[in-house]
Length: 132
Image (cartoon, rainbow, N blue to C red; front, side, top):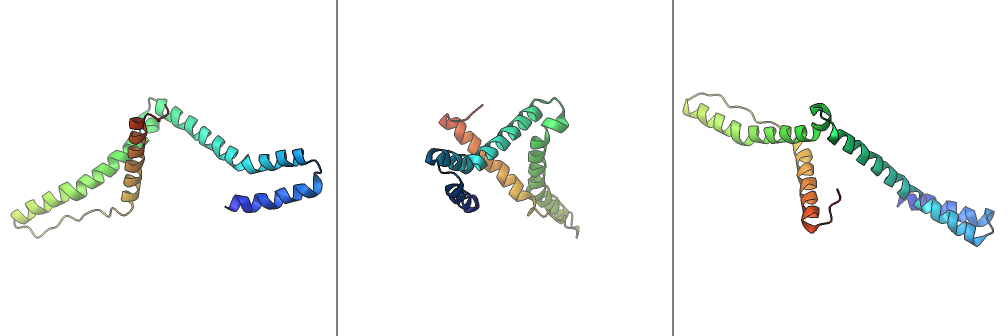
């Protein structure tokens, strides 16, 4: 990884400046785990933000995730239910009008990502490894 490319030169410099092997090993280990610790701290901070948002009674704070889901479901419903039925009814009425469909290329990655995360969370719950 890129991080290893940065860590290896630093740990080789430790050989030149720190004669004690134990101290050198300790510093090399701290340098190697620094990025992991930082990523862990960022994840913990995001979890705290998520908890605060979810606990809020305001729909604008805690409701953004469900809102995204409803928007995606509305887009799919429009494209695959309303438009075909509307076009069918217009054709029966002998109208020369077609209702255009939405371009779902921007929405589908969001929807599929949400569905994938939801499925993964359900799988964790079934296996009994989900955290609260």
